[in-house]
Image 1: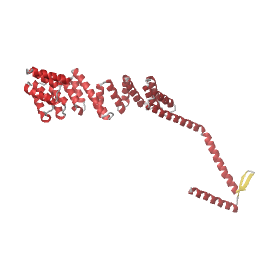
Image 2: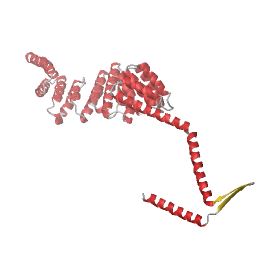
Image 3: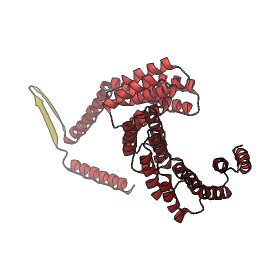
Image 4: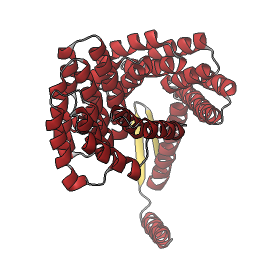
Length: 393
């Protein structure tokens, strides 16, 4: 405000000064061209010059506006279309979030033609069509999305693979993912989709081979990776053992992560596979070494069922564990089984009765019943058979 007052004051002072000067000495201006001449005062000439300047300025502004009018109309139309596209996209995504797939699809398709970047419109419309079971329209929208702009192939194919997996189109999804693997082999979301597809297809070999890359990329929680690893490894170990392929069985175990080789569920599966392949001593060594660092009741009970050639030596090993795990019902059951196989009947009975006293189990009752039958105590054996049936029920 003060600045404006100073400007007005300066203008008034300048006007007063100029007026004073022209009153003292009005001066004159003579313009001549050939026989034509014009003479006027200096003040009038200056005023005419200022007015001419302002007239020229206004004329140029008008011509500029008229010249740029078509472009302005185009810009206005573009802004209007952009606003229509923005509103259509926002409302379409809201409709999708609320589960109104048909309405969402219409809004997204209608606004795509006005959008400067229609890729997101077509991809979202494809998802909406998928939710309605309209797979032909879905594929059409994905095709339109692939034509939108250069460099959109990965985004389009990832969406296509995701939708194909969700629809159960496993062969098509596998083909899409294989093509993507050539383009972006280490893409994090691609790895996640491949894991999901292999898991659904129960392709344990492919999933098992993919696990190291999945672990390095951190695309899935460790708990999910462990579940996948356990499932794939168990299946591969079982199939290799059934086919009698010892080398394949060992290869599966060697390919496991180091920490996975201490998981009781996998150790148990590998030990059983080795027993099935007549590698009993290797299974015994595996269980014995694992139980030194990871105490697990399942592994302890499995140790007692191994068909080892020297059960007395295995019993010594199991008895050594009593120093740290005395009173463990599973350990006492294993010791009883090994003592029975070593034909140490009294020791076997003592171990089995102690185990059954701590935690009665059907399998303990069966071992006791069979042992007592061998010892000629049929009445007591029948009592344990009945107790085992009761516990099993």
